[in-house]
Image 1 (cartoon, rainbow, N blue to C red):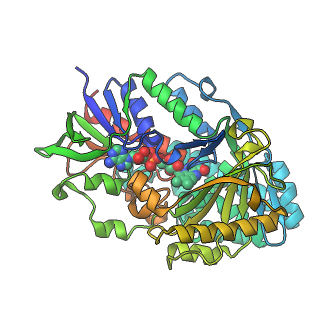
Image 2 (cartoon, protein in one colour):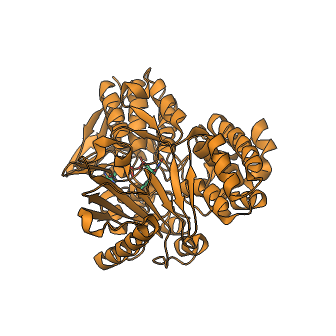
Image 3 (tube, helix red, strand yellow):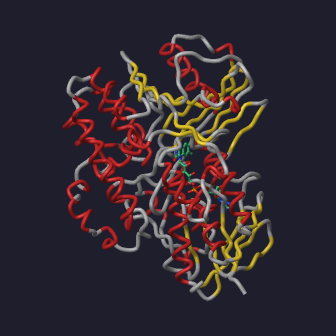
Length: 487
Ligand SMILES: Cc1cc2nc3c(=O)[nH]c(=O)nc-3n(C[C@H](O)[C@H](O)[C@H](O)COP(=O)(O)OP(=O)(O)OC[C@H]3O[C@@H](n4cnc5c(N)ncnc54)[C@H](O)[C@@H]3O)c2cc1C
């Protein structure tokens, strides 16, 4: 008889693991606390407007393709992808940089800003491409058990890049602060400051300028739906509104869980919920990491988000827009070093209905604004409103339009919601940052050291934050489970 795995949560990492485990012959049952699946990547639909609640940048299309190929499928069996052209726009105090959909076109824009910079850019991206190959082929597919996993011929040659920072490398080659900020932007997805992120992570720049920015028609939630369909084709059972209250352990082995007051027995438990929360579902004696361990870690930022419906089309913006018209250093310091509400935040604005008609009613615009903030900040309706007014004023000013009176409705999401909806540690938005000391084998482990047949996956373990890493995390943990259970 096949062994039964209970998976806690239905985020990308859980759905990925569910597919691999079901394919390997396990009976897989998912329990999700919320009414809908997808975790951080859930969807909000209201009055004809469609919002992705979390991720909106579809980067590294090769990882998604590889995931579906592992099941003999293609992404196009489930959703339609479009390469965005331009990929995005960056607003500065005195200029706007448009990132087009090919390196040659981006070189033209770099030359406009700094003469001679395109030569450096081509070299930088060629090295970033090499790092991408090494990262994807040699590093991220390792389970993070030992430092020796990182020792390969390729990584030894790149060793210095683990001790230099991306910020230092970029500044050596580019002088213009706008180009520096544009090249430092991709590593923000890893959750740490560019001056605390190893320069090896320049592979994110290749993901950006080399592989491009994509959009699944209908939004990122289409990927969740695709994985739900695939998992169900493979026999996975999904239960929503079913929070796990306790992980049951007998003789140091997981035997089941309690959900909605009922005991559900199984052979293996895998948690895709935030790692810190997952361990609180265990009796103290079975937890591997103390509160003091978590409190010393560098978490990715939390976010203040606004989902806004406009009754008209907006001008002078693209699908993705970054507002870097304030001091990045100060904002980063207020996220990581002296956590407080930002004095003058950078922010991101997303208008998917500009390229995808299905996202809003005709003649209207679907908007999503994001301000990164430190996890654990006080979160009140007054603060949310104050920051909405602040960014809307800046947005109107920078884009030269008055849209305040065109808002049909507005919803917000912040620290308290991350805690309430996802059991997120201090309301972090996207997990544990990928700093040098929180990379690979230095991250919380996929397999419990204290309880047999208890496993973890997701953005607080390997490889780290982001949708593509979540797909990989699910694959890695399923391989460990298969190996441990001789399936
Ligand atoms: C605002 C925002 C923007 C982002 N933008 C991007 C982007 O543009 N591109 C990108 O690649 N990535 C982005 N990310 C990161 C990406 O969304 C995440 O890294 C990824 O979705 C995390 O997946 P996960 O499976 O690790 O965790 P989650 O999605 O958090 O899944 C965990 C699940 O566990 C459930 N759960 C928690 N406790 C319990 C319990 N006790 N019982 C049952 N279920 C439980 C939760 O409800 C949740 O569904 C963004 C994230 C956020 C928040």
